[in-house]
Length: 119
Image (tube, rainbow, N blue to C red):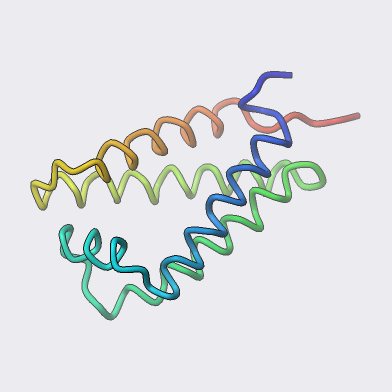
C-alpha cells in the first residue's frame, strides 16, 4: 500500500474538497478574488460547491467503491486541467496556479494508480 492509494489519503482529500465546497458556497473573499482573477463568469460559480461536494463523496467511496473513486480522481484531473488553463489564459501567475498544478499532478497520479482494494 502506498500513500497515494491509501483510503486515508482519499479521506483527507475528501475533507479538503468538502471544506473548499463550503468556502465556495459562502463565498469567501479570497475565493471570489481568485475566480475574478481567472475570469470565471458569475453564472457558473454556483456550480463549484456542487462539483466539489460531489467529488468529496466520490473520494470517500474509495474503500467500498474503488471504481467510483478512480472515476472521481479522473474527473478531478479534468477539473484541475481546466483550472490550470484558466490561470494561464488569464496570465494569473498567482499561488493559485501552483496549487491547481499540484492538484492536477496529484489527481492524475492517483487516477493512474487507483485506490487500494482490500480483498
